[in-house]
Length: 190
Image 1 (cartoon, rainbow, N blue to C red):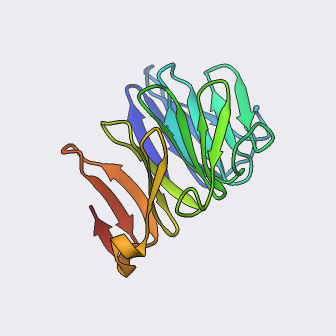
Image 2 (tube, rainbow, N blue to C red):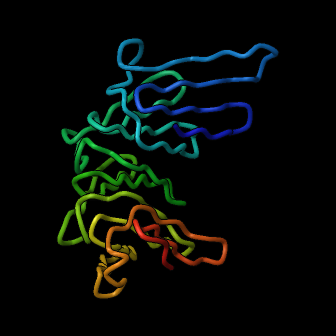
């Protein structure tokens, strides 16, 4: 279960449903969104991000990504241009572009159109995590290594660079010093 506090709003994501808790008032209230009571498609949420307009982006296991602006739901799938409907992670860069790591590559949504990148352009199609560094480079943690996009093209790093112990990258994050950290099954590397 993932829980994040954002001001007076708490979002709780469980494997089967999405609940929103607001403690802005003296009494606690919960709102539950799922495929039976809203425009939410699929019920297994795997990733979440909030854009600069406050819209929530929910990556799902089978239904692509759901976007909720506070009043209406929009769902994007492979029919719209998403690489795969199994979305592990949603990351938003400083320009507002959405990067979605899926089981079929990584997709970029600029607000109007989609672009998708797949292997061998990226290290592997299973993209577990996406991070953006201060120079706007996009970093992917994939099943078979790491990929970096500099705005012009992709560079892949596999076991030949990372070492055999660091091939399956599960997560990526940029620290305050600008170091790129990767979590692997057997440890971490930067």
